[in-house]
Length: 130
Image (cartoon, rainbow, N blue to C red; front, top):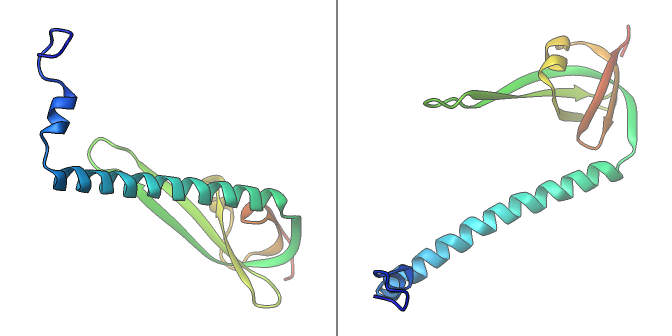
């Protein structure tokens, strides 16, 4: 019993645990929290980088489209991410995430003017020539 008249608590459980399990549990906790912190910091950096980038409009052609489906096991619904690869006159390419509604309107081979800010897709206006 502890001072409050209750049964054994978490501190009794923790103090009775072997050192190996304490160290291993602490290491796993640090790795998991480090992974979350890394993803969070990377997202903040990308967001700041996109905000600092200029809004760019340049002629481009749609050369590839792909989708990535994730989730959907058990009672969890599936989600889909959409990506389009654009090619510029100099042969450089950029793959940008797009909304599903935009993904459906773009076809491989479409030529036009791509508007983007860093890795943010802002729009694509079709033209007759590349």
